[in-house]
Length: 451
Image (cartoon, rainbow, N blue to C red; front, side, top):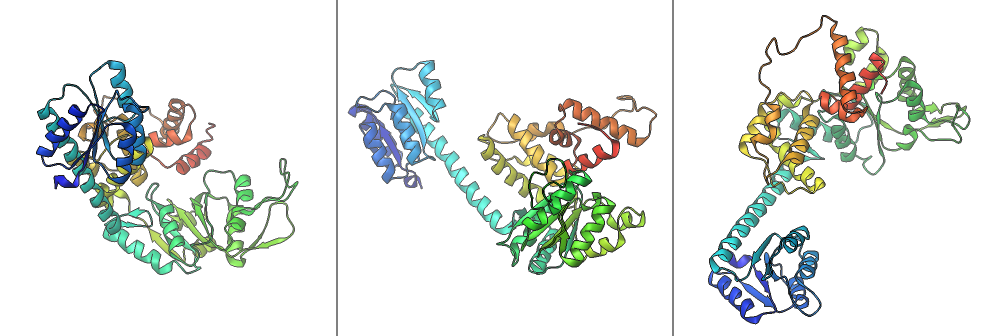
């Protein structure tokens, strides 16, 4: 197996170069040598070296740092080990900063070289196996960015395929953070409208007036600042799909306007006199029970039945715990790459902590928790200690005093405190509170909290 991991030795001193090559060949590795940086880069273009030993001081135009950087451009996965007889803190820092994996000093010890190579190749073998496993899991459990092996979710994904090419309106119900928009996208991109636009609108994030112009567009002069005609989301989604998130939060007037669009497939822009006709599939989502909202008189019954032609109810993460390891591994891989941190995975003990958590914020909360752990991680693997803050023990009755006020007032105070801690940043405050941003916007309106 060692022959599958070729090694390159680069040194202008022939004796040093051939000696190191001989040591490595005795261990069974295939080794090539180069006496200068230009020759090393040429060899690297032709062969995929696992490890390159590069001398720091070389005459002839390219020193060790330049050679290392050129090899990395050709072979970004190669591990570079800088060798020098002139060890200083500055050169070590520069080498590591530019991408060297190790830094060793001449004269080299054959046993030290052998152990170093063995350790690096073991890590590469593990990374290769993990990459293969990730690809296998992705093929097996990933459907249109939805990662699952939960039977209920599998049924939902099968349903998305069945209804993908229909024009019928769909209503997706589920707690905040369960992935309602991902399911909507899966429906859209599985069907005949996949090449047309998918337009998402958060109904909770805007006031009635702003949401109306956002959905239907406006004509020039229809309100202060309307300096020209603007198309709304329905027009932009023509031929495709419009996703109306948190549909349960729209006003009575907008409910009536939306009902007309669903019935007649046409509408007026704000301030306009000419009807606009569109071919749009509507997928709505809510974390509320709209049937109860209808009974309470807060949502139109006729609109509810128009929206609820096909109902999809997403299970919360606590009811699909078998997906937590898959989702956690996916988030570790994606977020560590985005943040530029070398985090290779998550330990079994850490997964036990995540599986045991209640996840009131569902998949979105899990994603935020993984990101926080990666940011603070000091090792190459997330372990139990990186999630210790999730393990909250029972709260003593005397640990904090609950004032004698209504529950709504407690919630209002918690929101105000979170906004103050996060300097008015709604996104960060919603994460701290463990709720969806659109839900927080809804509560800001309900409690009349400015931000």
